[in-house]
Amino acid sequence: MATSKPSCGACDRQNITKSPIVWCTDCDEGLCSECQKHHRVSKPSQNHNTLPITEFHELPKDVQQITQNCDKHNEKYTIYCKKHKCPCCGNCVVEDHIDCRDFSRLTDIIDKTKTSEALIEIEQSLADLAENIQRIRHNRENNLKTLSEKKSYIEKEIKETRVTINNHLDKMQDAVLKTLNTSEEKERREISLSLTLLDGKGAEISEYQKKIVKIKQHATDLQTFLSLKQLENKVSCENEFLQSLVDTDSLKESVLSYNVHNFIHKFLTDIRKFGDITIEKKSCDVILTRRKDKQAQMLVPHVSNRSVKHINLKLYKTVNTINYNASGCCMLPDGNMAFTYYGSSKLNIFSTDGSHDFCMWLRTNAFDIAYISEDNTLAVTSGESKRKCLTIIDIQNKLLKEDIAVTNYCYGIAVKDTQLICSASGKGIQLIDPYNNSTREIVRDTLPKFCYVTRFGDKIYHTNSTTNSITCYDLHGSVQWTFKNVSVLNGARGITVDNVGNVYVAGTTSNNVVVISADGQQHKEILTASDGLSGPNALDYCKSTDMLLVANCRNSAMLFAFV
Image (cartoon, rainbow, N blue to C red; front, side, top):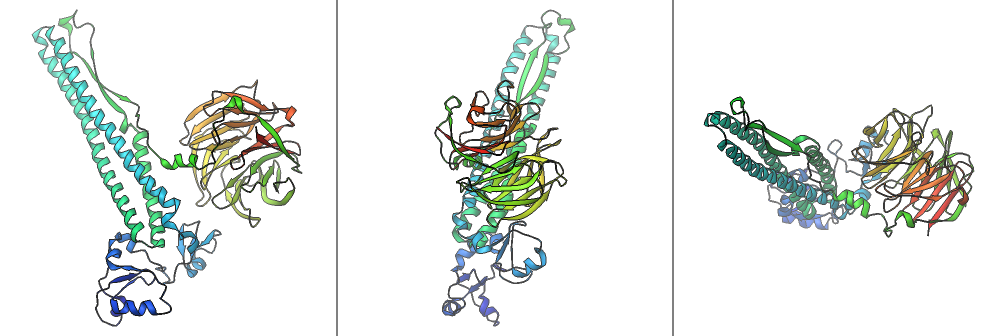
């Protein structure tokens, strides 16, 4: 185990005490000047990485503890288990990960970690946290100022009222001022507590940022990678903490107010108090910055601003999908197309020229399909089938990789990073992590069958063929807008979004495709039976080629280009 022990490891094993001048990250020990010379020319160690001992001591203590070898078996880490998110030696794989199916070579995983997007993202997330803390702090400081100003205003109003009435009201004046001061002090204490807590969080974020700098300067790739995983959890917790402040009453604006009773001037002898001091909690107006969400939208290929009224499509290619009643379709990065069929266990892949590439048979029925770019796999929902599950398919090796059990019949599916967004019949919209089989409810609702879902940035779009409506949610499940117009769209099924946020919906009953603007305010019918549609069930927009794939109920699919 890596330590800051001030002695040469090689000499120490000979009962000789010498101070090290360098640290070998491969051997996990310090070396004195003499041992360093032998170490440098020895064939097994001539390519080892070393760094000055002073730089090694600059690393955070927990980073120093990360070694190249497994603590349990004292063998070098060579494998990374994606399911458990941990490095493994050969014995670890045999003893503890024999049932895991998703491995990668550790050298491939940690290669260029210091310049990876993940590290940059962590740095940006830490910067976001620091910025968000300052925003919340500024919000709280402003609230203190407005409380004080409003308190002064109310004091003046109270005293002006007091002048107009009899001196025997002095006691009541004192009482209302006491209530005012108590209310303001109570809110001040709560806000001060928030500021103290934010100061602590700010200090933690600053330490994390310093830690990142040290890691980038001195840590090995493995140390950087594993430290990064620890920081990801910490950053996630800090984000959840800040979001909890926004979601709860903690950041609601405290506003002092004073209401003079109308009968004061008329019935002086019946007066019991000047008025009421109240605290009004206004909704928090702090918007937390998350560059990761912004980046997700920035990474898609640029498409010039495309207004709904100017969208027009031209048929590019027709594909014979072989089977009847295609219920799901998906465009792959290489231009290939994948189709699923309602009531069937078959999945067909077609090449870019429309020819049939290969077929796969699932262990359950297949309804909708989505592509996971993180590991080049397809995720397929089962719909109403004997087995309630999601199937993960390895495209490259043409293998059924995994079946993930779910509690409800899942229909429409979309992808968020490595997580899956599913429309669960009778349950709502769920976020499923295929790596740890965890499920989180985004929207709780008794949804019917045959609902589809898609995602763009921090928005989720969902169709409901029973109510003929399309609903836009944020990632917390709050409704942003709803579209419903049965004269234009009937039997809403498949749904997809282009690079600028326009939403495309297949109307199976109305036999058309309708595009809806990103804000839900505008719409346009862009494809009809005259364009060759025959009961469209599913559709998918390809971000890389800027094309729209529409799968008909009959044995055909159509690929359209924007003109």
